[in-house]
Length: 599
Ligand SMILES: [Zn+2]
Ligand SMILES: [Zn+2]
Image 1 (cartoon, rainbow, N blue to C red):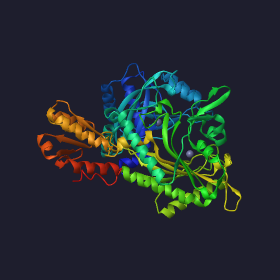
Image 2: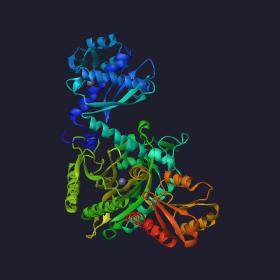
Image 3: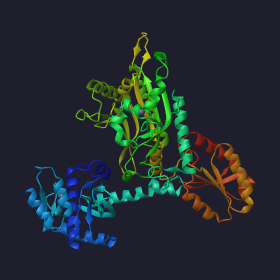
Image 4: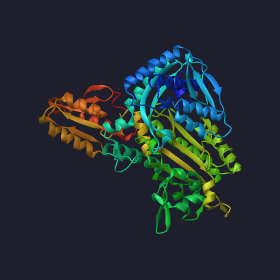
């Protein structure tokens, strides 16, 4: 390992690390087998950050069981058992698994293609069917920990028996395991699903369905504020907004190629009056129809259509999570139609616009990926080598001209063209694509788009797909975790809470709140006859940026006692001054940083 940082291991476990983690599953299986001699084994793969193994056991596992399994694993590691590989002909191997009572392994063997070598690995007297690879002996396993148990159907099908899946992780060094566990603790505190509940941001309803979150009033404020920001920036930068429907004829997607390349990610067809409709998985073909609505001259280009476009994607139910993996989502989308010689400038402008938004949002950990097609995968990508090399070369030039570092990802392109993906690191250190800029000469061909050039002849425009700040769902789930729920003033659902010390202050507090609300500030009064300490504690749980505590002296002097979320009390401030500063902070939309708090 060239680096010991947990993050590096998360993004790309070394070959040794993944062999070691996989070997740990054998050690775990051996330990489980000692406790439950009749245990039937499923599969035990390495996954991101660790591993699991599925077991069919006579009873449900308890936390005590996990401890006992860990104890036995520690012993097996100390024994430094060699992993010996041996190969058997299919029938012998099958018989062996049957004799051991390993019916799932028999099924695995039956499913192996003819001619494939069937191998077992043995450590001590424990034998497991496995392809490998492993490390040579159990003694080389570093620090490990069993994390949790969950139910999992054999082969993921409800028709099969439910097995018990034990999750674990392993690192070469104890210190690495410790920092990984610390990071998990921190991530748990920031989990957007937990904070989403605590802060009243969103919910799910089983009657509505999985992956279809509902935005609660507080979450809706955050979303609306972000959406307004997006639209204001777009208007400033020459985008025009459009509204388009969320469903369309299936044929639209056959022409665009989405049906061919993206069908599995779409909801099934709806048949109405003999016509076939689908919920849209993308907004592009809709914006194309608007561009086609009239024949444009080169003088009108670039045309930039933006929409907070809602779309529907069929994510597997097992992959749905909070706001981050959903089936209905609203993308801050735009499509730019331009001439060949405008492409690079438009891509650059889109990148700089994204950079500015990140700066305002305080997002600093991201990198640019140039997502290229995989020439070997002709199924996934439009087959037109010339078109690919032109578009990919162009994006390399953009990076060079902007003098920006980037890395290349082969096989990460859209089916119709290369992309610039901005990869953000989430609290788990995992990278996700948030913003994208894509150059597309395929869809303009499919839809035969044209404009009248300077020469009076018809030309084909280039299309640039621009995803600004991702979908509102993904972006806000990211921001919740990024801020640990403590939104900056401009995004905070409640910017200020005024706390009256006694009932006689309530009227004054209400008037103050009214005055601030009229300025567009989000202010509430806690006028309950509770102790001030209790009111402060509750406002803190809500992560409200400012509390104003109002007593006799404040009313006398026209001041408020300010309590800043990050700093605690900063003493009394004249009311007018506080309001002006707060208004400036909210209007600055992230820039400059917290002028009041920095007093
Ligand atoms: Zn193995
Ligand atoms: Zn698009």
